Length: 598
Image 1: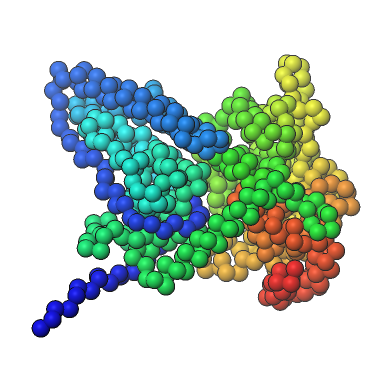
Image 2: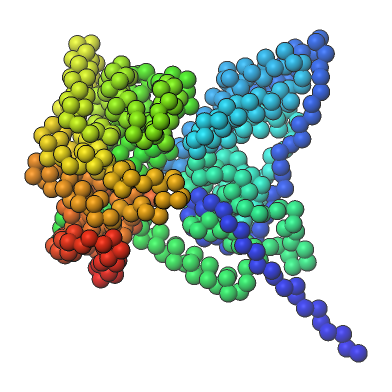
């Protein structure tokens, strides 16, 4: 009996969902990184051994700092331009965490007082600090806890003499699958060799995600259900893996049909990326030659690089809350000035619109004080400009810092959650006093003085926009809060979130009224809510008379492409027809029809 030839083992496609943190499609052989956290021994040291144990810790500390300095040099060598600077800044931050920091002091004290070995002391101190961050229940702060863990993990590796994984010798185009990938490890990935990566841990706010975006490596973090121990390649050789960094998906052993579909997506993505890259330095101008200002929102320090990369015409909304987080006390005037100056200089002559502090509601900054936590309804309580006016010294420091940063490039001052004319006048009085004080001390400030604008984000402000236009130099319409307050809907409440719709006629009429008031007063008006960054709404907003949009920097290319396909005359006619409607669903259908025809 003739034996049948062995049939090749059949692939069994497995799909895992995660967080797409760096867009793009990568397809390649898997590299399973089995290096996990090193085992941490714990034992008691005799009292006489404490100095030696502390000396061992300091030796590991110095070795870690040297490693980070070398990594910083390699990062600058491997990755030119903004990406290299971003990676270098990150590694410098790790070095600072290992230099006279709370972590270092805490470990030395713990060895002294509890008489445990250095590795165990590092692990205990990291857990304590990370737990304090986690209690803040804020994604940005949670990401900073990851930074502490990363710095501590390097210390433990050096104390236990555990080697780091080497990714420089992997075959070209391979996909790394790992339980975790530290920012420092990510920084050393060569985009010419590594196709993409997926990890079980990590989130979009962490530095691993930031570095992946900087390098342009497709990545999915926080992959649910991925069991590294069950991914042995077996007899079929290396596993084939797809990383969908745009859709947040990992596909292992794809079927031929799935593979073909993702190869087509990869080709489409590359073609679109080349098209968007060519748009970077082109003007956002409609077919009938109307110039549209497309600016970037700025919330975290790494976003300056994104704004530069995507060709932002300026910073349309700089959220200053990040300056007040991760600290026990509010930043003083000098600290704020230094941070703002770096941003203003980084934008190289393009206008930076700085919004004064907007904490409260869902945005907490513990350095400001405990009053924020006492409100029965934080969304309607002591927040934004109300809080700043209650703390005149804090407001004066912030305005002074903005004035001083304005000596290095054009800035504007934006006031959040204004509801009355009197609030604007009060701020202008504090600003005038700050100008007088700085001039008397001979400190350079913006010349001429920065325009002072108003966020239109509560219905009351929109309804008196014609009056506010008499005391404000510009408007910025915050459509997220304006929709929430107009419709009385909390998007965080999943039971009513489906009712949130910026196309509701009431919201559109408030936007239209505000734009008309600004145009009559001949002051600029912009949109800085989520609709600004969604090409679906671009034609409608331009038809309503808006000529400035501010959005997350990665949205700029798509919106610019949409702008260049439109003409103002046509969008104005369609916008008028839409504004005559009273049904939200009908408005949505008309807008979609408009987008299909233009």
